[in-house]
Image 1 (cartoon, one colour):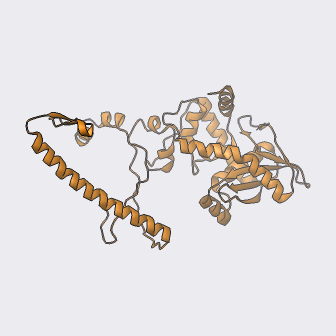
Image 2 (image 1 turned 135 degrees about the horizontal axis):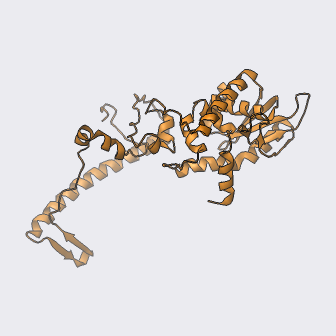
Image 3 (image 1 turned 180 degrees about the horizontal axis):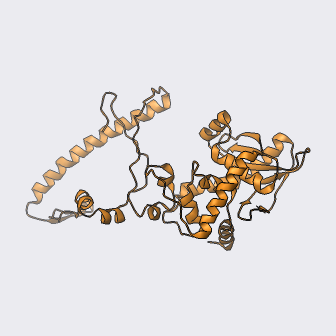
Amino acid sequence: MSQTQEEWLAERRLGIGGSDAASVLGEKYGCPRALFLDKTGVEPDYFHTEGELNLFRRGHALEPICAARFVEETGMRVRRMAARVSQNRPWMRVNVDRCILSVDEDGPGYLECKTANESVFADMQAHGMPEHYILQVQHGLSVTGWKWGEFAILEPYTFQFMHFRFKRDEALIAVVQDKEEAFWRMVQAGEIPAKLPDFADDRCTKCVYRRGCRNAEALPKVKRTKKVYVPDTTPEIDILVGNIKQLDARLEEAAALKEIERTKLQILMGDRDAIAVPSQGKKVSYTLQSGSLRWDAQALDAEKPELAAKYKRRGEAHKVMRMYDMNEVEA
């Protein structure tokens, strides 16, 4: 880790930033307990995947492009600025992406730059800022004392762009300030917040503290929902599914033929447990092996539940593609 990253982490732990506001209030992506562990310097026990890290890197790399697009679209002038600390509440901090230079009597504005995939972008087009972003920008306005800002979103694949103005909400800012002050007192006193009540909460399954926080309890299986199969007549998909069907059939046929040939070979080897076939460049062994050692998980759960909870691990959820015949019942 570079010195710059260490300094950045140390700076984050001096107070509550805009992106922390949603965690303090228990909204969407974060929870107070995970934020407490971060602020008190607890090392994560489950690290982000490379794909997740790339999303963070993408947002950071595209921030200046998003800001430039905002300037191009609106004609407003912006500039970078150092992190700000609240005068009255030194534990409230904010890294403003850009300061919008004063254009009227409302004074300077706060520009928040985001990147979002097509689905998230479309959702924000329809419904505006999600709750966690609303809390983030109101936190920022509280720290800076400014009256307004602009929220800019860049969709990096199709390069769609939109922005909309937000204004200072004194009632919401008061809630944010009170909740953050109470949380910061807990951090200073070492009073860790309670765990989230639902083990199946998405925030738990993605949290970098998910092992230690849950005392190594097994995380739940992914919730199964009834699938709705929507007919798709796209020629490209038709071709791909047809190709997979043919390959599956060939693999099944090849597996059956291979088993027949293996049986013939076993018969011809007789009592020999190992032979070499120089012409094929292969060695063949046919020997007795011990059975693999397996844990009786059900018995362990029943007889030693505490031990099972301490050491049981569930792998990360991942998507699996399966193909069924139209009238086949899914497994």
